[in-house]
Amino acid sequence: MFNKLKAIFRTRSSVQFLNGIGRHGAKPRPFDYDNAIRQCGSWVYAAAMLNANAVASVPLRLYIRKRSGNKLFKTKPVSLATRKHLTGEHAGQIRPSHAVLNKAAQWGDQFEQVIDRHPVLDLLHQVNPHQNGFELTVLRMLYLQITGNCYLHPVINQTLNRPVELWLMPSQWTSIIPSKNQFVAGYTYGSNPLEPVKFTPEQVIHFRLPNLTDMHYGMGRLEAVWSALGLHDAKREMDIARFDNHARPDYLLVVKQGASAEALDRFEKQIDSKLRGPRNSGKFITITGDVQAMPLNLPVDLIGDADRVLEEIASAFGVPISKLLTNNPNRANAQIADTAWLRDTILPYCVMDEEKLNEKLLPLYGIEDEAFLAYDNPVPEDKSFQLNRRSKYVSAGIMTVNEARREEGLEPIDGGDQLAS
Image 1 (cartoon, rainbow, N blue to C red):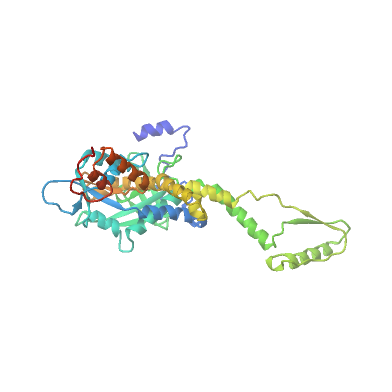
Image 2: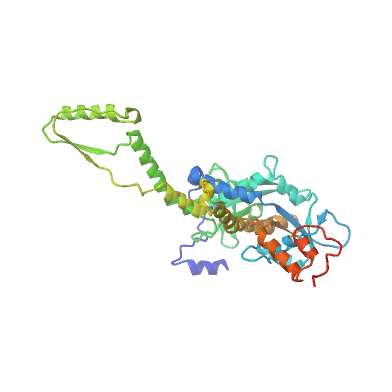
């Protein structure tokens, strides 16, 4: 199949399939990840951290299929609201991953949430001796946004035959070895490219964002605004240089009357020593003769403008500008922006993450057919709307009192199963 795809894309397409011409057969990364990591500061870091912390704050739960007989782990029934989310019955585009949708639909109401200690939950809670699950999720999301890729290495206990640790492999030190037959032959890892450690495809879980120009490596959010950051940095260097020059633009001084080279040199040194730099603010110099100052600067205020760069960064990272500036006095607008951010940015990250964990992590425990991992719905419901809907449904005889109470997570009451007449 890969040979057919290669034949299609061989002539004119820029899609890169193989080309493993780097060290040890690894494919060169299409973007300078080292430089990207160094550029992760200021607004970029703020935007990426907002998204990463938000995803890591959404609970990730384990659900297992109901079976007859004794239970190995404590479970509890799934609430109606949670079941609606897991089966994709919520209005709009608020849905979990396909792996979750398929199993929830297949099992109907025959699955429950694990509330006991479980090997999968234990690992996701304490991923290794030095990191907990929250820390790893934040790092995972940061690397995804900055480089477009994140690599996890599960450490397998040969006696237990299951993962007991998860380690993040920094993207700037990880390269993919392409394969003509398997698409990926493995990975190389190490800060020293001369002494890399090789991993098989089964030893690495690769998370990636879509990339239209490369089929192996993902494209990060930072890469999308790279040119804007370059202009911003150039503008900032210009501003600093101008500040160091007492906020004065460069000038050409034209001496209209004849002057010797020695006199011009002394004049230049006098100006430089008395007027250059912020500490010489307010000073002036007196001269004799006919001298004209001609400004050489060009209007560059719009190049790398901070507001425009901030808008590009916020747009690329899917973060409302109001969350970065925290100066929006309109609470209603801020709440609307927050809801849109949770729906359009955080939810897709959760969907992508749970899809990959269900695809790659659960099979390492041999429970992929009996369980699934799913994030809670990060998008808050309109409580006023839902309360009004339930009240009207109960009054109209469409919903019983206990059904409404169940949606609210409340216990049923006696006589609450009758429809209003």
